[in-house]
Image (tube, rainbow, N blue to C red; front, side):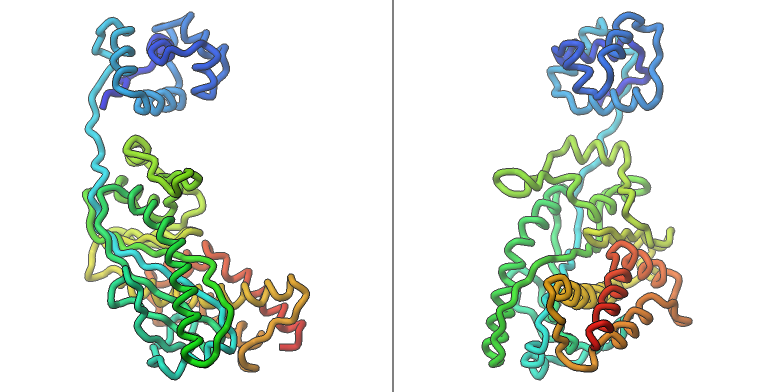
Length: 385
């Protein structure tokens, strides 16, 4: 891949000519003032461009098709001095284990399913729950349906995947969300009907956590890969008429070459042990030293409790906004119970490792759960629950 060693007005103006754009069109294409493009033309080699402008032009050149690059070289008179060749960053393959969490608030109807399920160890939030296998047609045998007496059911779907590009995984993620929500809704309604407690309910969202098991990336490229896994919208056109569509190699190549970090993503890894990232769209984790890194089961246990409390607090707040008092499945699950869950999730524990603490704090901060829990506590207290 050809890049310019030093951008001057000569190279900047030549790129506009290679693109066959007028001064105004080229300026609009780059997002600069037309007077700037005219200055490039007038001063040529006498004007060495600032680093941020050079970086912008590097990106524009990488996005040009081969015929435009060839024309660009010709306009520079065959002079190879401004160019250097850089090695393309590998875009894959990557082996990833996808963990999806699909929560649904069932209220008291969850009682009909509890006798079928086996008790589970308590998670970080100390929430009692039970589970049994989830029969998702495209998920592994590890997948389970978790049932919480506070009124929430969560499908945990485990789906190992090997992809040639991260954009492929991102497009699959968004497309499969639609079918997963439909499946979860149908499956829950079937289970509730068989248990004699039919309830009109629907799954409304999915949260993902990814374990990156193997890839060709190292160093800053590996960090960028985890960022893309955490914020997949950067490599997908979600508004495409045919559904979510991967943007292509050039977009991913630019992200890996330039580096990418979303400002709202929080790192919780502990190098050289692991890299972990948490964002609004989910979590991505890669162990660098497997014997010292967090097990993925620890991330799953935290997300199960977090998503349970998110679904429960959402139900409470939605009912209040609709002008109704929320109906909790049992008297025990009032504002005091929520207060206890909030305390267990947010307070550090003596036996907690630094990695566990960093993970917990990152997930809670990006999920915005603490604020919702406090609001739900206040709402239940005012309702006398």
